[in-house]
Image: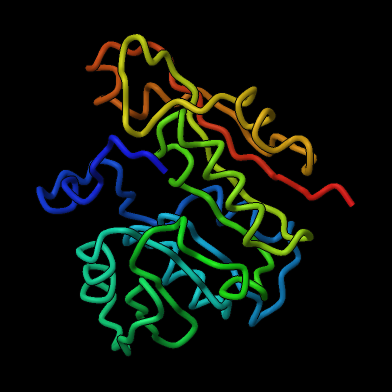
Amino acid sequence: MKQIVDWSAFWEQDRLDFHQGQVNIYLQRFLPQFELKPGDQIFMPLCGKAFDILWLAQQGYQVVGVELSPIAVESFFDESGLDYRLDKLGSFSRYRAPNITLYQGDFMHLQAEQLAACKLVYDRAAIVAIEDFNRPSYSQHMQQIIPPSTPMLVVTLDYDQSIMTGPPFSVPLDEIRRLYQAHYRIDILHSSEQIDERPRWRNNGLDSLIESALCLDPIR
């Protein structure tokens, strides 16, 4: 994928306004509806050092994540206090701990065999981190590397990018439909105005910020 946003620089400069310091509320609220079993694999693209990784592992799920920044991956393990094994797998550095496997490298280099057991994709901050011209490549590659029966829990933002350019970027529901509706039924699990809870965004000139949690269910 062509890249403009240098996410490595965000981590190197400790510009982490996008990092949530808690488990995502939509993950906690909507995970049960996917009826996963202990030991099932959940894939987190562009996972950063999200609290969600450890929380899911503690629930008994196998978490697989991919993250470009080595600082993010190493920070996750440092802050969680977990020991890990580190090896190389192709172009990736692979970090492994109980119930957790994090691939440090380019998402576009992941292969289907690495996600053959995936039962859910949890995209909390991936698609909103990708520029609009790269999203078709991202969504196409995602659909190539996960089993065709795998649903997705996707969190999106919708705001006026003529006022604030991002990242994270605005990815309205219509764009999600264009990217995925050929193979997925798209259901809105929750959608609400969040501008009052995000003063930094209002200070940048926005008067509306819609956050949505979506279920993408494969069409069988």
